[in-house]
Length: 189
Image (cartoon, rainbow, N blue to C red):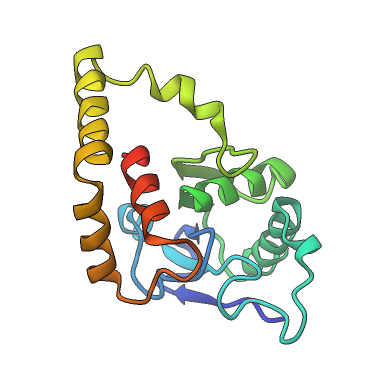
């Protein structure tokens, strides 16, 4: 299948930035921060099996792994190294950051630098490994105030929040019900 990517070409001797969103290619031809800092070329790569970067009929979900995505980026990097002489820098945030570090892990010689803006390593959805860490962020008084706001919202303002969410979303809540979405949003705060 084809993998969608967009290229900003400036100069074959300039650095090449591989920009990973981790999902669909929403970056298009907008230069990311690393690209702007180094006046670099940029290739924004859509992650396999997102948007148009998927097989036309059946999606073989067993092949939606970080190792397979890293292999995709390895082939792309190899092809582009023949066209660009400058250093190759890869970057991404969140799932794009994870994509960057996994590419680097499986193919350490492909790139010269990796700039991962946030790269969570999650082992499930939800992944409760973060809870202990999150419970240490900020001063205790701030955490207590946030918990008090969450309790207030869920105890005394739940109906208002559900009505507002339902009015704003219309019929967009098809996977989960509005009450569950509201509770999840308040807890995730």
